[in-house]
Image 1 (tube, rainbow, N blue to C red):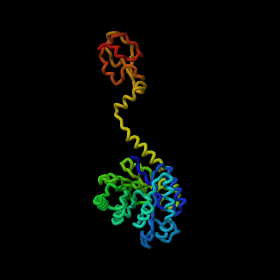
Image 2 (image 1 turned 90 degrees about the vertical axis):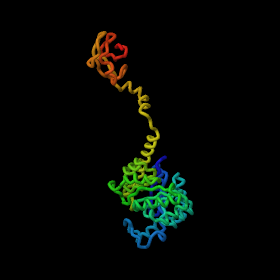
Image 3 (image 1 turned 180 degrees about the horizontal axis):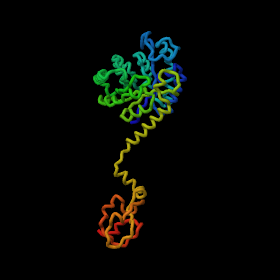
Image 4 (image 1 turned 180 degrees about the vertical axis):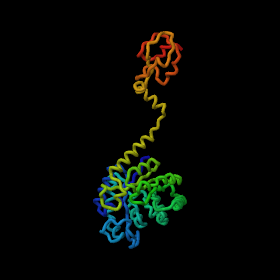
Length: 336
């Protein structure tokens, strides 16, 4: 199955529908199949005192102001959804409140849910999403191992475990390589659910390492260039970098899908073996009845009679015809 690559745009569009559409077009060019946004309804998400994760703009006096500024109207969301589908992409959007989830459901906007790690322990919210019978992709950056086990158990008791994908995630922006902790992917595999990686390192090496560990879903942030405005740019990959990851992943799929035996490859190599492997040649003239010694032989390309690997099988045998130096050694040159 091809790698499921989710390209996170989040709120990097800064509330501009035009910029959001430009991001969608960039994602389409990478070869990824899913573009993800975020829906923040300020009045349903946090208090007026909700702090900024990173103060990056003097334009907004509060976090709520920021959420209101970057959110789209319902008509705007519908326009963006239609545009995304017309680009041949899946539209995905993380709801940060039950009300946001209900609005996305009302608009028939998503065919699965992506839940940020801040809402991973929000059990009432997860219960609400499970009732929709849609698959759920859940980041684990802000939950403990015991909480992960509790969440998986809840999904299992609600017959939703087969719809759950857990995303290894480190909630550092950007995530240093030494903090990426990809060993935890192996631990998540033991839980018998879908496994993915939500990466904030801004490096393709982390994503490739995750793929090599067997993840099926990869989420990465994207920015058009490293000087782009916004709090997520340092955690983001460029479109070309995402394209590189996808191309490498596809190549790996081809490699994994075509195992061969060494015997088959050996048989296929016969024409080249004759050219590149060394055969046994006569180093000196030899008379009838004399025995073959190692000093009588030399090893040259191409192999025309006997292969160099078999030289010991002819040592000590008697010559049955006159031999001239420089000719390949043949089975008809000796007795027995």
